[in-house]
Length: 426
Image (cartoon, rainbow, N blue to C red; front, side, top):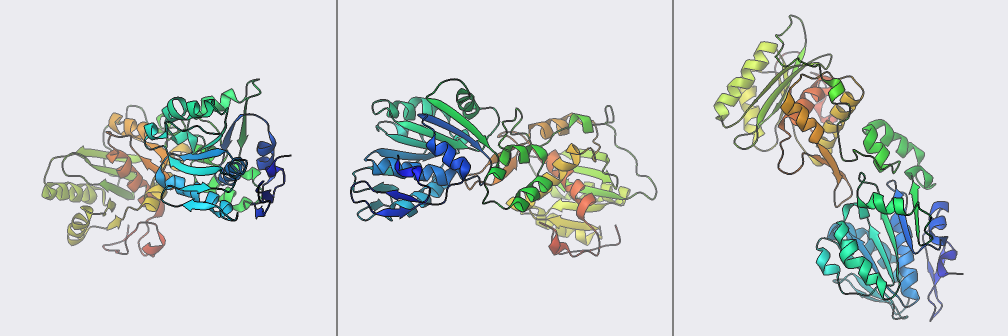
């Protein structure tokens, strides 16, 4: 019987004190008890993979082994370090080296937490056990060129834990665990299989996240387009409708504005109340005065409520538009407000409520837009490096205005919306 076959206590073999382990649920115990040398866990968020991995590292160290916990970045590694330190320091005689993130036990075993920011720094150590945390976000070379050889001389074992991130090398490891090779085993656990998570939290995520984000992050599914934010984009396009529609008397319009000065583009997008895009304009390398004039012209022509990015450089433009008596509101970008903004548009397109003009530059930006997991394990949405996202942002602002902006409503209740309501009724 191994030390971890009891779910709540673990013993140091030399001094035999007991330390308190976190409770392990049925799925965690299944993985813990499996004899495979290499174990691959594709798990939804908050399933408990970190809790399981830290316990297995401690077990190896209490047997006198050298264990490593490797994470994509220094910041993510801090999560594993907290868990390992909280468990390991219950053992009398354990030495903590905070700067090195290293615990050394009376058994002469050790656990060290490392970052994979620089894969070459992982070379040279012989290991008895390894946990690769958020493995899908670590470069494959860290495993193949540095960590796998480190397990060879001691015939060490490894556990790969991560939420999926498309069909990358972590997915290929997971597939290997599905083959008839007793040294490899893989599992796929949705968040809901953790009995300690309130089902209401999972249901809230299902309702408020785009479908493929929910499927990947909470159902732990490997999706071919796992990084794509916008689905059903081409189905939302009215083919051949590239020319701007003239304003219709009595219709209600909303203008989304994403501002830029030189390298990026300022984009103006107008939507009607039915979430049909009716106007698109994109330009750069013109003065702020001319940009203000273009915004005023379009807003006046469509009698549109204006929602623009008022973060940073957008603030004086916002003030200038106020002075021209436009019905204008400013949207302040934060990590959370941007996610809310983009999620809202993604769900509108995905659900078929949004109709788009046939604008190739806009289509390409929507198709290229991606999400990724940040070092703090939040979802970050952005264009790939080197590409623009101005058309996406302007479209998202117009859609947000249609869906959320109401004159006379308390704007403090809306994420990112500044408390300044001016002009007439929208």
